[in-house]
Image (cartoon, one colour):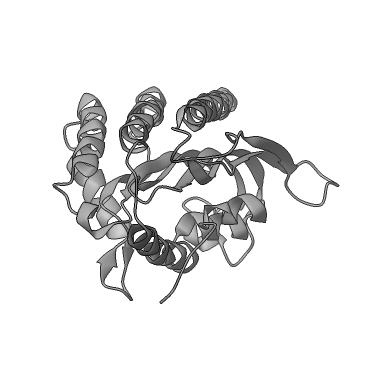
Length: 291
């Protein structure tokens, strides 16, 4: 029988380690951004521990890390480890919860919104969930804000997908196409009949009966993101932008809000399980326009 306690600790420890590494990399970019384009003092992450529930019993919690800077207009890198019981109206939606409503879940969730409209927004999350079953899930996806960049041949999108494909291919030659298509289906706005961005990979309920293999893949997704997105930002952050480009960015951000509030299962899961509302809704862009 697998040692679930050890597996939980391994996963939770990794998510915290990855949070620290990403925050450090993003703060370095924040300091290195050119002063002529990004005036003012560089930002830094504010980390806020939080506890789930009313404090009478231990239901876990997490650490929210939020930065509002000059390069990163708003970025949240949050980790959590929570446990308890699913509410009766939510149990049938989660594998293994109908038989026993108890759960344990840990993960990292990140969304970055940049001042410069020429730098795409990005989302990444990975998680490990245990009910009477256990599985990994997550992925990473890119959201360019300018129409000229919102195609699969754009350099940022090509580099983003190439890096993710290399990760997938190291673990299973079928993963990339399967998870890329899953991402395209998931991050789609039916009422707009358009994708949220240019995709990436998305996977859920990953359990091949080999915890170490599944955990290794999930770690590689995180380290791939840590390598790839800062490189993209470093390339783009020296590009000036125009007022019309900023306007286009703000309007496009409205689609991001619509998706997260209408369709995102992570938002629903966090709210339904008594998660920290501030961290759950920190994915909302700081400034948005609907024309």
